[in-house]
Amino acid sequence: MSRTRFITESETGTFALGRALARRLALPATVLFFGELGAGKTVFIRGMCRELDVPPADVRSPSFTLVNEYRGRCRVAHVDLYRLGGPADLESIGYHDLEETADLVLVEWAERLEAAHPGVVEVRMEHLGDDRRRVTIVNGPDGVSAEPA
Image (tube, rainbow, N blue to C red; front, side, top):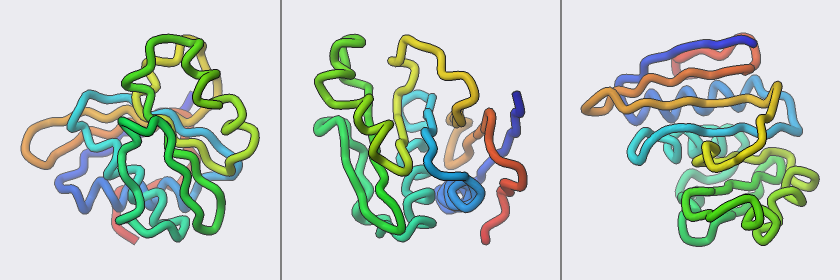
């Protein structure tokens, strides 16, 4: 299992790291996001989506809708599990269908998933104060760099 750690110093840096991951990611893929409120998950996801030609303004946390779908160079499903009560809720939002039909599934609050997902890319984010974030990418592709492209 590969594990790469980065420190981003700003929202721009977190966005750029998201772009860098998307640039190296082989599709189809699922990326699970872990981190508390304010950790920067949605900013990172905006960066990933931007790299796939989805306008950043279109990318919003799906806290109330649970699933947002975007079209860029591929079909992206952005899922927020924060408000889910349990595994039965995954079925009600069509989660397993998304895994089969979307090119990229981005899951915020992946801690709510009960089953392990071996080999799936994980992004673990921690808020370090101010605009600083520690981002750990587990099972990510080689060559991801924190430097803006």
